[in-house]
Structures are given as C-alpha cells and as structure tokens.
Length: 385
Ligand code: HCR
Image 1 (cartoon, rainbow, N blue to C red):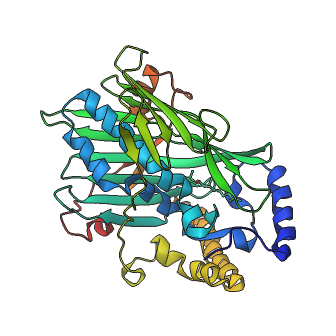
Image 2: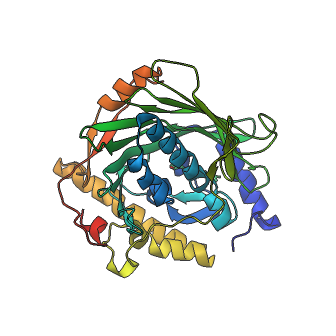
C-alpha cells in the first residue's frame, strides 16, 4: 500500500518539486516528480472512469421522455465523478502523477453484458504527446448510446494549489426509439489539487460545468469544496431547466463522492457508496505493443516495487524510442497517423449546442471516432476495433 505522506528523506525532493511547480505554468506532465508521487497508471486509462457504473450509462436508453433522459444523463454524470477524481486516493494513497502517454498509445476494454444492459466497449488513443491529449470513444451498441470526447489540461499554480483547467469536452449520443437521435454536450469542471504542502495531493472540483441536450434541456452543475454550500468537501448543486427557460424544473444537491438528493422530494438522486465495476481488459501477454499496460509494464512494475532505478531506465527506453520515431518521420517527411480518430478544427455539435448556454470558448476542436471496423459481439471486440 502506498504511503500517503512523504518520509523525512522524501521531503527535500518534494520541496524542490513544489518550487518547480510554483514557478511553472503549462504542461505539468513534463515536470520530473519525486518517485514517491509517481503513479504506475497511464492517463490513457482514465476515460474508463466514464463507465464504471455501466448500468447507469445503459439506463439512459430506457428513458420515456426528453426530460427523463436529461435527468438520467445528469445522474450518470454525477455518479462518474467519484471515480474520475478520488479513485487514485483510494488505490494509491493520494493523487499521484500518472504516466504521460506516448503518441499512439492505446487502451481498450469493455464492460460485459449483464442482465440485458448490453456490452459497453471502450477505445482510447493518445492523439498528442506534447501537450498530452487523450481521445476516447465509449459505446453500448445494443442500447444505441455512445460517448465521444477528448481530454487535455492546462495547469497553473495559485494560492498553494495546482489549478487544472480541463480542455476538451464530451458528446453523448442516444439513438431514439422512434428514429433520430439526441445529443448532449458535456463540459468539464475545473480542478484544484490541494494538499500539496503535506505531500498528499487530492482533487477538489470548482466552478461550473454544463450538460446541454439538443432538446433544449440544460443541466448546470456548480462545484464547491469545504466551507461553501455545506462546509463539506466535494459538494455540488445541479439544476435542470427546460428548453427556453432559466427556471429550474429540478434541483439536486449533495456530495458527489457519496450521496445526493432531489431537493424538492428529498429522495436519493445519486449514491456511489457501493463498489464500482472496473473495466475488463485482456492480459498483458495478449496485448499489442502499443497498448498501455504492455507498453509501460516494466516502468509500472518498477514503480509498484519501489525500484525507481529500473522504472526510470525503462521509461528512458520508451522516450528514446519515441524521439527516434519523430526524427525518422521528420527525415522522411511523414507524419504519425492516428488509428481510431480524425481531428476536426471545430466541432459542429459543440458550436451548435454551446450557443444555447453561451459556452466559453464558443468553439472547440474534436477527435471524431472513425467507424471503420465492426467490433462484433465478442468479448474481445474492443481490441479489434
Ligand atoms: C491533472 C492530472 C492529469 C489529468 C487528470 C484528469 C483531468 C484526466 C481526465 C479524467 O477524465 C479526469 C482527470 C482526473 C485527474 O484528477 C487529473 C490528474 C490529477 C493530477 C494530474 C497531474 C498531471 C499530475 C500532478 C502531479 C501532482 C499530483 C503533484
């Protein structure tokens, strides 16, 4: 089990690291961090957090009205936050610095069909190295639901905390029973990494994020930490307003890592106190060389075993191989080709739905999933996409 606080001997390297962050703004992934704060998990694994309660994801397809669909999307979204932002503390003892994926790194997985919920497949590709950008596509074909998005971060240092602005957005698409589809534009909250001073970083969410449906229903979610709404960490308030109105038809509040309530009825809205369901992946032996857990396996082993010399030697091997690849491409006048995604400078869905709630910025780029293979019904499907 990883320690949550650094020992005396680790304190001086931590202090040096803090000084380097304080005078730094931009891409945190390029900073060298002290070994005890390194995570053996690559950022390409993070999109799996979107679906660790697969039954909430698939339930969206069963909504009987636009209003109910927006409620179920909000419920699923809030229920992902605990996994997205606190699971490293549970697993690794505190928030740690994830492995910085290489260009072209892949992560595939699935959640099996249980009780008719349909299988959900996950495809992740690292589409940029510097700055790090991760694109993902998650689909439950049987239920006609998919989520496509990308994630990048801009970091700065303020008041002793790291502030992370999330760049990127996600679009959830639901095929409707009578034909046609409904789209939801999902924007992402701002993060604050607190606890740095004590060497045990953790995440707090801040400001506001939105879920705008193409039907006009809009969820506005406000995040606060200790000392605001309830005096507790990880607090949120969400309001859901109907098309063309700023008057909330529903409001919900509570703790995104525990439970929340429907304010009007007092009934439970979200409850993430039960165990979540981790994504199923192939064994490392069966994986392709570009798949994250195989690519990083010796680095990850070194970190897990506390053998940082091996970890850093293996990490250098990967980085040198990447540098050589970029040099070869430059010499040949070629460019790395993405496997699953096409880049578009402006996402038409973001522009169209973003206008409805005056999204800032008004346009964003996107990585569009290329539907060029049929995954088929097998459990190994995601690996063949
Ligand atoms: C900021 C962060 C990398 C990005 C991580 C993101 C934003 C990635 C997308 C996921 O959907 C949600 C998510 C959760 C993580 O909280 C966030 C990471 C937290 C720390 C990490 C920094 C690059 C590392 C900072 C080093 C610290 C711990 C000293």
